[in-house]
Length: 171
Image 1 (spheres, rainbow, N blue to C red):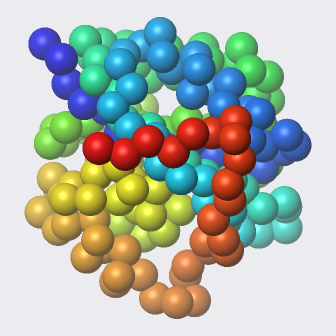
Image 2 (cartoon, helix red, strand yellow):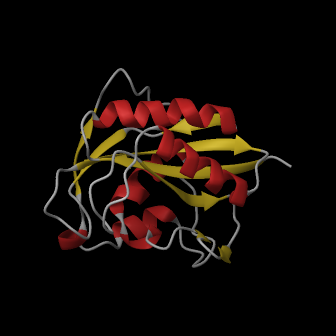
């Protein structure tokens, strides 16, 4: 059965766009790309004493299970050189499963929708580029409503970025 997976990617180690583009190319082996958001420069979340991130979202139509996708994502991160540091620390590449269709998953290391989805503009804004009518299946709230509910002091997006290495494709 083909399902739509929504992934959010981030990098704050140079060359950030190269890491994102390499991850996107690697993800092509896991399903058919349905859409890719624009690029967003965001201040760091959690531990803020580090370089800004570039974030984006990709939607894939895949036959993989969410657990197989998670395993493949971890392999891609390792292949691209991700080093384990401390929580919320710098990352060469970070790929998170934000949404999986309308599924709610809470087993082991896989939690979907992503735990931070409702309060992170750097997740919501890119997701809205490719899924403007998406809803958090846990709360039933539309993502655009969740984004508008984030207080200004908690917003991290600084700007959008255009780069030919990352073509923006929408539905």
